[in-house]
Length: 256
Length: 226
Ligand SMILES: Nc1ncnc2c1ncn2[C@@H]1O[C@H](COP(=O)(O)OP(=O)(O)OP(=O)(O)O)[C@@H](O)[C@H]1O
Ligand SMILES: [Mg+2]
Image (cartoon, rainbow over all chains, first blue to last red; front, side, top):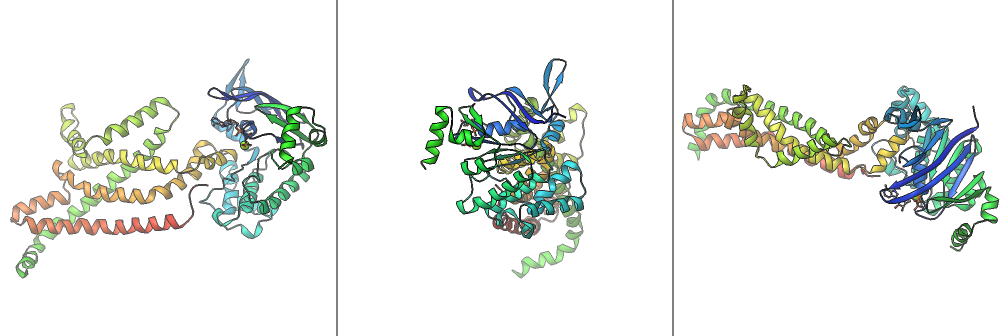
């Protein structure tokens, strides 16, 4: 088994005329944590969404653990796989959205348990036991019966993290997990993500929290207008950026 | 005034045994048509947003066309119009299929609005945990859409109950047909139609109360989007 968990190979994504990703390549080793930073509209969310094929790349390929995501190779050609196969890949990738997207008709524990139940066919008892364990991991063992609308934003996002963890994913994707939160709730969510990072989980984290990215990321990528402008260890990218675009972005960020 | 009620007192014992089975038929007709309309309506609503071109065109076309045709025309078509093709439907079957077909076009629009009210992130979160598109529809989108569409869906049931009376025109043995027969047999149209009106109301009113109750619960309980 190679130690490359995720490989993004020259991914281009266009929406009609608009080319949003202009040939992105990137590798993530098992256990590695990548942070992606960049201005609004640079394509960070789109990149994250192509990793689990919520967006289908216009060209290029994604490999998870050496296997093609969303495609298979027939002779020399790449063809789309069935929705069933695609679902099987997505189950291996946990995703946390900026807007949480908890399911409002289910309470916290049901939100976490329904995936294992319906996706992996685990019995209800086992799925609930697993869900309870995951909610404890995000420090919400006292809220398991609450419905999303009765939870704060920070609590909702932690349930969403527990929901992703219950997939027992190989890789976690975070798309600006704290951007929709009131400032006083950001800390509790970052703390949970930090704990997950310390467990040695592989993750891709899109964030504007530079301080946090610096603490947890092994590699930082700076994206602008659909290309990766530069990448490297956080100390280098944040302190000695090589590209003027990176410098401009960072200085603008710190001036706020 | 006394005279007025005396007539009911006299005739009700003779009418009632004829009316009761007709009420049963009206309920059966309505229930059958409604089930057909709901199932078809859901399929049409899903079809209207389907990625499969021909299916989408068919569903969109069906909804538009059927909404533009009077239910009565559909009933006549089914009951009389198919006979030259050798298809002879009995009045009850023609009635419930006709009402179901025409109701489905409206119910499709109700479902479509309900499905659209569910934020697209809800479905994406379901896909992201590894649900298939079908599972995400079944467990995530549909249950939320149902909460939105339940009140209008109940209102559609009331409409259908009342509309079932037009099946008397193709001689489906339901309440209105029985009323027409009794009215002409006893020469008491006012008495008969008032009674029938009260009976329709007695069937519809509990549904209308239920619809109001559901509406209240839905608007006060868990919000649907996000
Ligand atoms: N489904 C879509 N259809 C058309 N255009 C889209 C779609 N999704 C994203 N875009 C466009 O792609 C560009 C990149 O969007 P994206 O959301 O990936 O940026 P981002 O880097 O995540 O920005 P932000 O920091 O604001 O979240 C934007 O111009 C956006 O309008
Ligand atoms: Mg984004």
